[in-house]
Length: 628
Image (cartoon, rainbow, N blue to C red; front, side):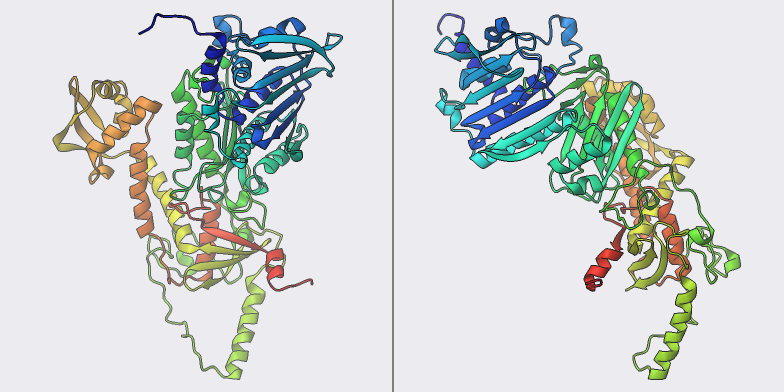
């Protein structure tokens, strides 16, 4: 082995570039973040051949002093931090002082800058084996332009790892999207091969911000999302979360910002996944654009060279805040939060208070109908069973004539007259006055779907899925009110765990006890399970306890018990809900619609499938070419 020696500045920078610069998109990220830190209000990005041949980033920021130009291309040279205290409370996007040095070591870089107080602009470039910086006068408005050419021209081995032009530009555009979503007060423009891809003006008003999100992601996302604005315990969360029915096959529409910095954090992902657990279809991914604000001292951004990862000082507090905020927001989305004519897959409701019980015309009560509650009204001549009429009690169809295919013309005319009389009395005179969100039931289709008319048009409800959600939510409330019922084990279960897991079990003993689980440490790496909840009699207790300990170690909290309990309640709700081909009366159908409007997450069943959809009048008119 050779003697220890210092690496040359160029080689050291090229090694550092391996962590910072993987493709043109990384260069755009670093340079645009520098422009934002410089106070830029307009940033132009120009690329050729996916950014491999040319990248030019121009801003109107404060500029760089002539004496600092040469120093800016040196490693560990920065204006963002000075002391350790600055590092522990970083408020800027960049702070490492490695970006320009790393980029200039693997590209042909030219930096031109005009400081606001200077009379002229100056230009710097690094050339030669020792990367000597050459400074010369130039013509340039106030601000900075960085021109990067021929990526990896001097490291051919790394150039071979670059993908096609289309792929590299797609990564570059994705980074520009993230940066544009992080700063609405800044105008961005992106050009590729002399063609304008994005031209975004500053967005100061909320409606302008929504337009920017729609332009960068999709209009459907804004139309199918819930706006978030919550604050608690020194944490603030704003942004948009997509409705469960607006889900993706992959996590390509997930943007989370911490103090304006886009991050991908396991703790954040876990909290959001928990919030969507009861309403998202299996294998689908939620869509969201969220902004978390907190004291910079409570988050460590100096974790990874690319600054994509952060570490929270109090991860459990952040996790619980995110989960509770999103869980409440998704639970508060109900049909009465949404404009008439919108379905869960089309529009999102705002964060409004829960629906209050309604009666009269708003509840679908007409001259022939009586109010249908979970406890059936005996005065209405309904059954006296304690379960809802559409769940399990058989209907009395003795007076209902069977359908006939051999009706005469007179019979048909008579039935049409009867239908006309029913139609005149079954629907309100004004569809917009006192019209509930899901409208009034008019028919049942094939024993599966309920057809209802609301102010927007036609509502189609999957009666089993809707009743399953209603039953499931009421079972959860009932169990929560009664508390966790637990029972001692006749033969305690001995668990072999690691010492760290045993320490965690002792630390969170109260949390386990509140869930009906009693653990005792009987050795350095041994636990004894003495008591479990009644609902977990058939569960794999050792695996469940081990998984809970793993969650507590990684996230500071665990929802394994709650998830298992809800899974059991979901099975009970599924078996206790109305089945297909169960004939419902008009009052029963209206009662189900009213319960949907008052139930959390009624837009999806327990498995994440939608429970209702809307066909607007314009959509129906289009089917029949009306107005043409």
